[in-house]
Length: 391
Image (cartoon, rainbow, N blue to C red; front, side, top):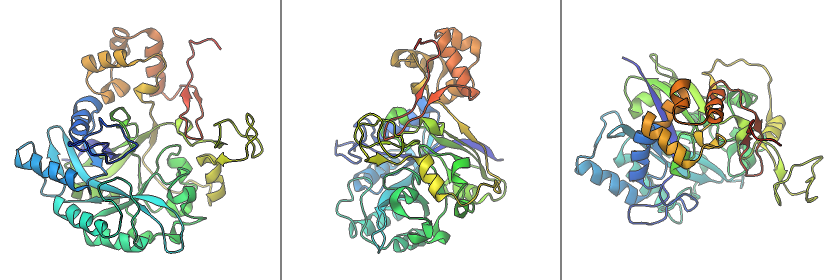
């Protein structure tokens, strides 16, 4: 019988259990143990992709948890912990032979053994495999072929963000400038874009879209995610879902309204001010961070909707709700469990028993896509307008 699973496949490790840095820009509290605990008990995620599993100490910790009976290997790929399944992933930085890029890509492998093989292969091609998102000195298509050899999945990451992404600065017009299109398994949309925006690029029509959080803190997990219909939470089933085989499929993508993303509109690179006619209105600088919306206008090859896709549902994370502080959020979680339940299911009456009316109105408006939003850009998130606040 097919079931539905909440899946977030892009979560970083900030520190190992010994305290060694992995993703330097990520929170130290983002350890493997905390990720697993938070995904299951706080966020309501069924499957997580931890994309720093190439780090030997991380693999050692996973193997130890299996040895201790805290987790077990799934026959069809993945690691099962209590309440959550772990997919072994890594994020790496690629630069092609002509110097185009750099771009970030996600690689997922079905077993610890194959991730160790890939980790050793990376160690001969990068300066420090104990860190996240490191540049690999290897032909881009050579990396793709190695991933395919190991029965892995290859997914370009956050493809529209201005920095280190496929369409941000990686290519001029087409992904074929850098990658073999036949060795791509899916496209990760990332911040500031959704399905309708991405489908303006015709060469993407052949790929499924995934929407993941790229979490750099525990709170950011499941900021974006997808709902996937599968028989069970395994790597093999996920592969079938990407191919839409035998009823398996991504049935909905969830993510920020693109306006809330850090890079939706073009902003000043110096002060973050708004731009008019390629010049900052505040400081006059012409150094700009090009927004995703403007970049897509340059790349767009079609305006026709010709691809049938699952809906992209604009979700407002609880931390974006005006006046919803940490203590109130803890109270909501204590009473109603996971964020998934609070955001999507808890009744208006039950919410009113805990939080003030303005917060209830905002949560309900978020469910219906009716919140007013001020667009983000230049590395600053957009904001949800507080209707109760007088301007």
